[in-house]
Length: 146
Image 1 (tube, rainbow, N blue to C red):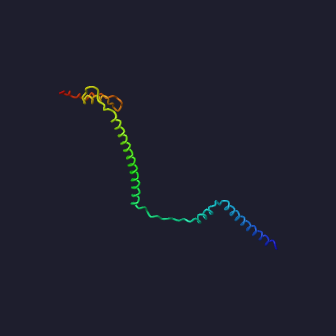
Image 2: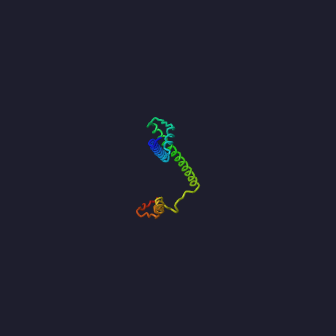
Image 3: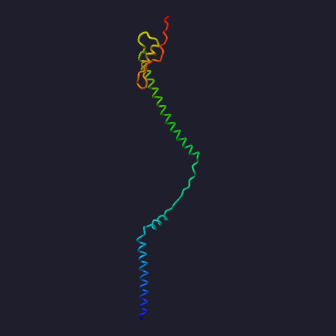
C-alpha cells in the first residue's frame, strides 16, 4: 500500500472514530440526564382509565332527602319537649302534694285582702335586687263593716 492510500485510510478511521466518540458522548449524556419519565409514561399507558357516568340527581330526590332530615330533627325535638313536659308535670304534682300537706297561709291578725296585697307588694324585689317601694300605688278605700 502506498502512502496516499494509507493516509487516506487513517483519515477515514479518525473521522469514523471521532463520529463514534461524538455519538457515544451523546448517548452517555442522554442516559445520565434521563429522569425516568419514559418508565412512568409506560406505566401510565398500562393503566386502564374507566369513567362511569351517572345520571344527574333529580331535584325531587334532593328535596325528599332534605325533608327527611328535617323531619328527623323535628321528631327528635318533639321527643325532647315531651320529656320536658312530663318532667314539669311530675314537678307540679310533687309541689301540689307538698302544698296539700301544709296548712294554707293566712296573713296575721285582722287584715283585708287589699292589705295583704300591699304587704306582698312591699316584699317584691326589683330585678336588680333593690326592694321596690309601693309609693305610686294608692291605698285601697276602707271597707265598711256591717
